[in-house]
Length: 179
Ligand code: FES
Image 1 (cartoon, helix red, strand yellow):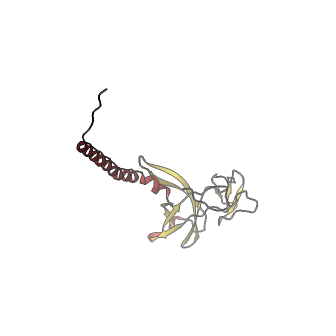
Image 2 (image 1 turned 120 degrees about the vertical axis):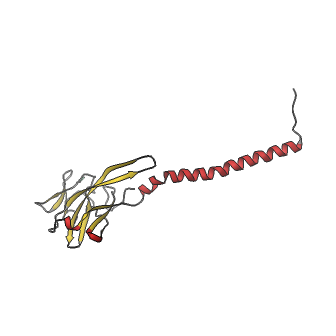
Image 3 (image 1 turned 135 degrees about the horizontal axis):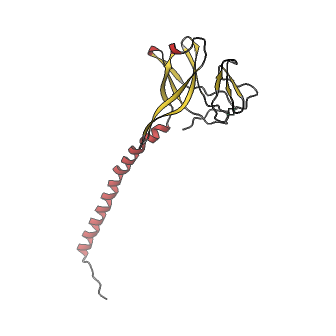
């Protein structure tokens, strides 16, 4: 059997070139991984915080405080798709001349949608009979462990009502935002 020996000088040159190639490859991975992170970033941003949506105007809400139901339609964008779809709904009512109350329609008990019943001046959940006052307070015999989920909102110039829409985990006594 015949073995080939590489002279010392050539071996050193070979090792030097091999190390240079490895280092170059590793450095090349850094921008590549950063690129992947940027590519996936829309998914991460979508999961953070609420969705700020212009829902209505103050002047179009009934002055007597009757709640009005509004669907929340949002453009959902992730790394691969862009689609317009309903993501939930809110009840908005005028609490004072320049103030509103906003509630997520999802019942905090187990996730059914509550409905406003004018004859009771209350929100009712038909699934297990939870009842919430106009201010969102649950009645003593309601199975829901917490009041209706109020949502942050702001009234901007011209009376536009903007809502920070979020969904919350159901079946809990405290509000925990679904991310
Ligand atoms: S889901 Fe509303 S009372 Fe159970």
